[in-house]
Length: 130
Figure 1: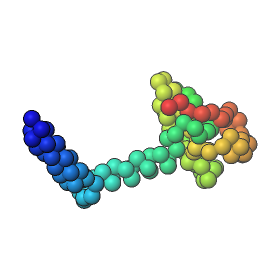
Figure 2 (figure 1 turned 180 degrees about the vertical axis):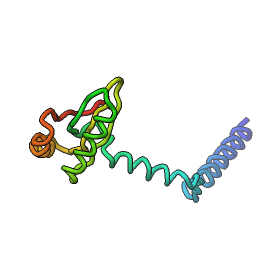
Figure 3 (figure 1 turned 30 degrees about the vertical axis):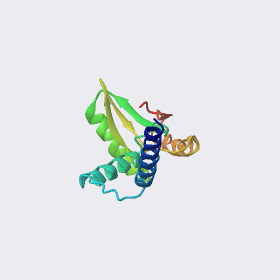
């Protein structure tokens, strides 16, 4: 009986030593295979975020009406009068709206609105919804 316990103990110690000696798999190399188009997609996403699609920015609405030609005319007039800011047409049923560029702070938007109101008195500042 003692001999069996001794063999079992020795075998247990031997297994424990072997498991700890070869059980450390902390070193190695990892190869990441990713599609080459992923970087292009990330660049497009960065560009979209840079273009002011975030809702924490302010915009100025120049025009709102249901006539497309009047909206395009207001956009051309704005772009020729104020070359610092770009105007874009937004369609929200049933109205066409002309929005100016995005402004990071309310103060920037207020300064721009002061200049824009001389030509477009109905202009106002707003934060677009997401």
